[in-house]
Image 1 (cartoon, rainbow, N blue to C red):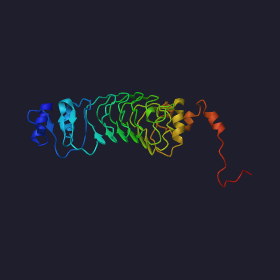
Image 2 (image 1 turned 180 degrees about the vertical axis):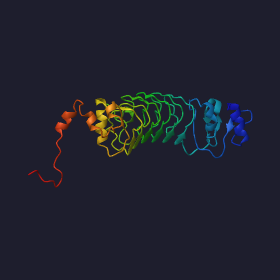
Image 3 (image 1 turned 90 degrees about the vertical axis):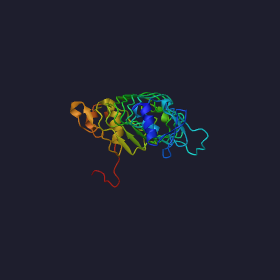
Amino acid sequence: MTAPQCQRRKTSEGLWDKKQGSGKRTVPQSVSLVLLLPLLLTLGPNQCAVAQRCPQACVCDNPRRHVACRHQNLTELTQRLELQGNMLKEIPPAAFRDLPYLTHLDLRYCQVELVAEGAFRGLGRLLFLNLASNRLTALPQEALDGLGSLQRLELAGNLLEELRPGTFGALGAISPGAFSGLGPRLRSLHLQKNQLQTLPALPSLSELELIDLSGNPFRCDCQLLPLHRWLAGLNLRVGATCATPPSARGQRVKAAAAVFEACPGRAARKAKWTPGPRPGARGTP
C-alpha cells in the first residue's frame, strides 16, 4: 500500500481528519501515546500501522516521520514503544534519544541486521528490550551502551555467531568477558536458536532466574570449559547441548564433565578442591 493509499484509507475509516491545505493529519481519540517519532528509521510498507498510533492531540506528518505535540498540556511521557513487524533494517546511533522515559521497547520481526554502537544511548530507564527474530549476526561493542536498568533482554531467533568482549560492557562495571557488564539486575536472558558455538561464563549475572541457550551448536572443547563450570553451579535448566565433537553430540554442556576432563587446568582445579565432611557424617573407621 502506497503512502497516498494509506492516507485515503485512514480518512475513509474515520481515523484521520485531514487539515485543510496542510497535507498533515490530526489524530484519532483512542490511540496510545507515542511521542516524537522522528524515529529516523525507514518504516517501509508498514507505515500505516505506525500512523494509527499517532498520539492524541498531536499532528503527524508521515512522509517525514514526524510527530508534533506542541503546547497540548500533555501530562504523560512515552514509556512503552512497540515497533514489531516493521522493516527497520538498521538501528542507528542514539535512535531513541528523544524518548528517555521508555521502559519497554519491542523491536521483534523488524528484519534488523545492524545495531549501531550507542543505538540505545539515553534509555537509562529501559527495563525490557526485545530484539528477537531479527537478522543479527553480531552485536558490536557498546551496542547496548547506557542500558543500566535493563532487566530483560531477548535475542532469540537471530543469527548470532559471536558476542564480542565489551558488547554489554556499558551496562555496568567493565571487566573481561562479553557479558560481564550486564550486572545483577538482569533476571532473564534468551539466546536460544542462534548459531553460538562458544560463550563466555556469565558470573556477573548472579540474579538470573531464566537463561535459555537451547538450539545453539555448542562446540564442547576446552574453550567452553568456563561456561561448563559456571552452568554446573546454577540451579537452572539452560538447554545448552554439545553439537561437536561427535563423541559429545547431544550431551548437556552443564553435565558433560567427562568431555572437559583433559582440558589444561581442569586437573589442577580438581586437586585443589577437597570436599569437607558432611554434617553429621562419621569418619572412616
